[in-house]
Image (cartoon, rainbow, N blue to C red; front, side):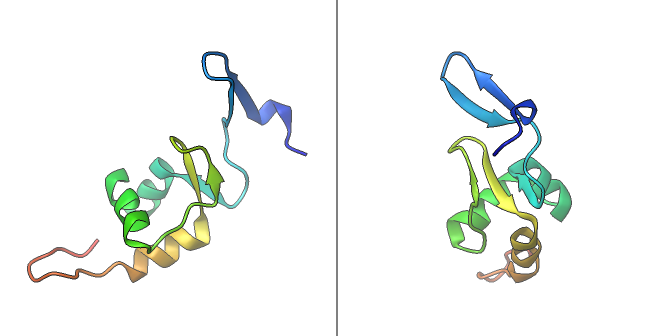
Length: 85
């Protein structure tokens, strides 16, 4: 059971969203802050298959913190001249 105090109802969409993500998970912004990259880089890691979402909503995905750390160290440049993440 999810603690109702941690949820907020968005009246215009009827969607329930976490104010504070569940323990062990982070939002895109928090994942980027943790890794020292931009949120777009986190979304790129998802697109490239280095990181998978574990919940949330399509607009507010959640990621496991352990998966974020693994993706951080797995991200390598794949083209000449590309910078490492």
